[in-house]
Image 1 (tube, rainbow, N blue to C red):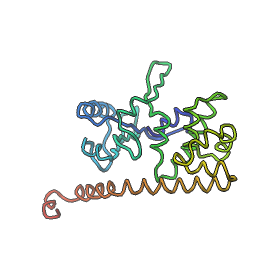
Image 2 (cartoon, rainbow, N blue to C red):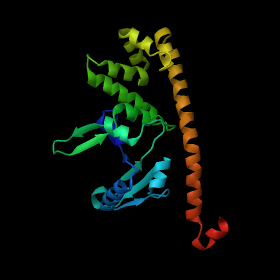
Image 3 (tube, rainbow, N blue to C red):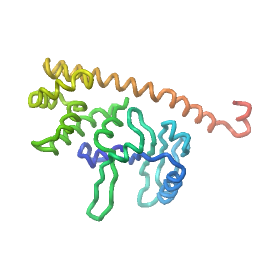
Image 4 (cartoon, rainbow, N blue to C red):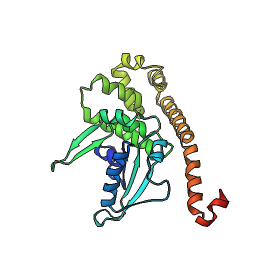
Length: 237
């Protein structure tokens, strides 16, 4: 669901870690623990790996110690802002199979784009590259579903303008309840489109910050508890 998925979709060339969206269930967590044990993975900081923390939306971070994966970071989440439940994500997933038969299950591209709408600077250029790569890979005969996806998520002014020129009726049909940016695409020049895209990004960043604020407070409490000597915890609480 992270950088490795972006590599598969052609939006990135390299990623230092591997992010997984997982089903938060007791039996599944046992399987995850066994896999992490094979990687000799250790939790980095807080929170610990638990259903409670996963269900609340926390990410759990690991560092691998196995000789064949030394230093590799693994992050797992079960819930993300603005993204559907795992069951729905699984139904829409993209499955890729390597030459050796290994299967890779990826978030569907629209779900990956939603997951990337964070307050992190690096995610927004990635969204742009993912849509551009999908547009190129599609060729000259996109489906209506692909066109709607590009209209709703593309962040390249020239691409949006091109789509609106070729498919003006669809662009108008998606305006304004689906995306305000399309108003600028249909009526204005590139500067107005860029300003509209910037405003859209600021709103998403603020929403992401608001979503994470209570979760960050929970993590800070966990850090303080872990830093408190056992003999002093009763007095500190």
